[in-house]
Image 1: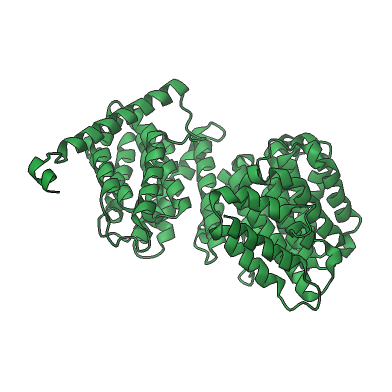
Image 2: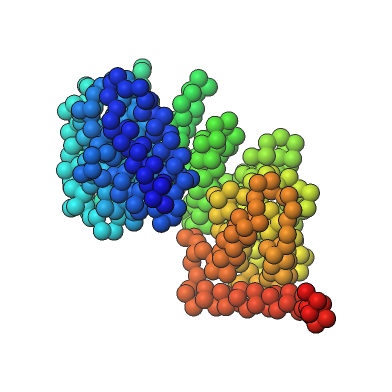
Length: 569
């Protein structure tokens, strides 16, 4: 332990002793520190390392190195930029508890760099550290301690008074930060909301009509509005025309011209749609086909960040349209037309998905799941059963033992969520459906350890939705669990030689434990309200089935003991 800390202290001393003519490259030293901090530290050393890294009084620390007066040599400036990115990563890695004592020092250092550093790149990097800090759950540090009001004033003044000296990237960053302050500290920012709202909204027509629009400023305005609307949508709705105007520019932002190589605008618009779809509900349904085509195109985009954001936006969009179809906001005839249009598109996509884009399939699956309630309303229970049977038949190739794990893991959580949504609309869960579900959940146990953390989480939420749904359908939950828990425990305890490449037995077992934790105590779902008493009763059913499965496993074990062999040993 002490050896690692000495090494870290050595790096900090090396870093802070640098000057313009130094032999060492600060970026190299920071890379070495990264390697040490993110993979060389023991759990009990993390708190001590935070004290070393972020001390504002020690002679050698990252805070000391960030002081702009250290010089404007190219290497040092580049070092400060990398250092700020490193600080942001450390904040996320170490978490609120270990960062708590050092928040003021980090905040002051980041603001200091923004105000005094000559390099735009370094000033831009200071926002990464500040954003990471403000995104932490800091219970002990309230707005007063952090002096949020003064912080907002510094950046607002810089944007309005010193704008001519700022690059468009810095302007975009300031907008995003002011929005984030409204989201995290609404009690302090409410006095400024009206002014900020007008400022953010006015940017959009001005920039979109400009012959040379500033991309970073547009993206910053969308990001800022996304944050501000979390607590202040009432202020936004109070002004007639605001929603229509924002919807118009959001759609423009989603339409990526072929020559666009940076995607900050479409990603910020997709996030806005994902978070605030309910604000645009009437427009989303009326312009349903146009938005669907736009989002489908973005789901297939070659940039993974765009594609991921588009799928989340597609979920929010389909959910909102489905809700509108279930409400009486429009005429029945209009709703039926919209319903038929979407169902036709989902079926076309599923049929073509096998030959063309795998994304088409994923969208179709989500669509059928989201449109379960409208199908029951505008078609019939028989139609819903047909959709379910077709989905089960279609999903079979994904849960075969020889299925492509990568392809399976990309779609299975969507399938499970869709099945749950459709089953919710049916009175009974037929035995044939339970057989399909058994094979699907068994497949999840088979490949779960090879999933990425985000995929694991998506599967856990989808399984929670399925368990909650089956709990409401007579003895369906018991029936399914009595079949799959036995297989699941067997998978968990089995030896897996050479599968999953780099996963060792301990790591594999740890991942299975995470799955069991989520099965035995399913995560709550925002859009699936269940009374506490029922939720607890469901957990009792799950625990009961788990104990029964364990007993069955124990009965099958050969626990006989040969005393002669024992003595020989």
